[in-house]
Length: 72
Image 1 (cartoon, helix red, strand yellow):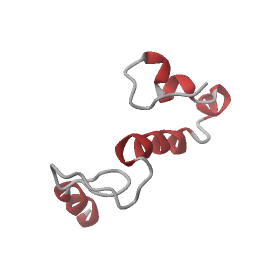
Image 2 (cartoon, rainbow, N blue to C red):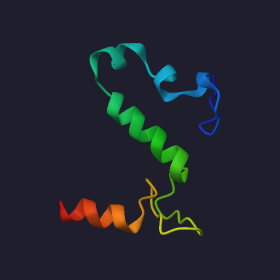
Image 3 (cartoon, one colour):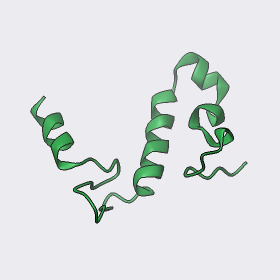
Image 4 (cartoon, rainbow, N blue to C red):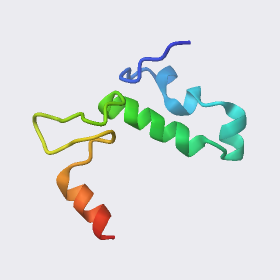
């Protein structure tokens, strides 16, 4: 089933479309979640930029978040 990651439909939730076996064991669950976030935030484009904020990159980090992460 093709899923629109921008849909508000509960059936499109990454938690509902994850492989039940990997979700139960924890294997790959984080990778699946990160993949969904990247697809929704940037469409997989590492050079994506939000023209209305400082958000850039795959995860659309804003400047203050990025600086906080590298200082930790």
